[in-house]
Image (cartoon, rainbow, N blue to C red; front, side):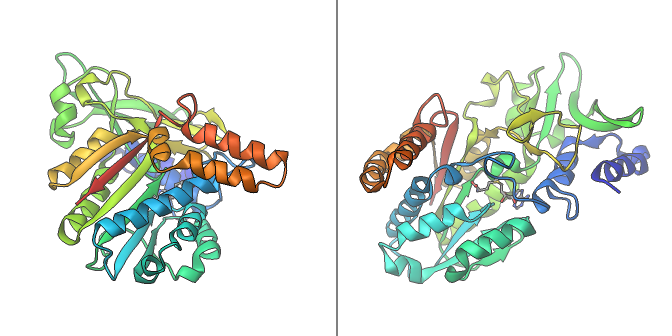
Length: 353
Ligand code: SAH
């Protein structure tokens, strides 16, 4: 049995009711099916893996986010007890760097209840190895958090959540992209979708080009926003994506499959390639704004520079032992902040009470 067999069986079994399979269901199975899901079976990071993320490029990234968390905690009035939650912590590298930097404030570390939300048993092992001394609690979803102020960090989490792709052809009703089984292989299909299940901003724009929305992302941001509204707090989410109102977006298909750092066919090897989409920052910010919270979206380069990444890089350069280390620090700074690399494409959403 492979994931492809399982998907074929689900499509065939549900044919009278549901065929073809909604794209969000296909992505969910590919990424987090308990046995065959991409994240459930492997450590995907690094040169030998499928992709690299900012905390794996440089310790500066996590360190600065740790200082950001301490500053947010102080703004909340330095609560004696609070939750620090990371969504999708990967190997735990970001949080380990963040908490090392946060040790400038021992009361922050003493009052913190570290929560980690991750679907992957393999990556939870890595997180345990890096973070055991902070006694983290692992949670399966964001519905049951203690009644305390909440600080949330999420790097490259929302791009991994399933999306739907929809479009509105002139004079016709709404369509969605779906996955079907055809001539012994997975194939794309287009089917109808009721207008009522499409978010209002996309419906209002009614464009003929594909548009994406992520129901699960909206649910998670709504749950966390409600918690922050009730108990105070803030959320920081960094990812690649766009920040425009729905009516200005024309190219909406951003779904990509990546294996060994190269794009591959989304349908070719379900469960063996990472599937990701660009994050719609306006959509996430508007969920939080609807709860009455403050929101901002800033390019990553600008955000990291405001937190002092250049000063931190200078400091590390003076401590570097050899030319290779110095080159690594300079190239990491360039990669994280330059507009031609991650500086503009990656954005920072902040939600605050
Ligand atoms: N933040 C890390 C890892 C990013 S990869 C870094 O920057 O390196 C995405 C992470 O989200 C992985 O840890 C993966 O296991 C987790 N993840 C993906 N889908 C998830 C879901 N639906 N629920 C919980 N965690 C998920």
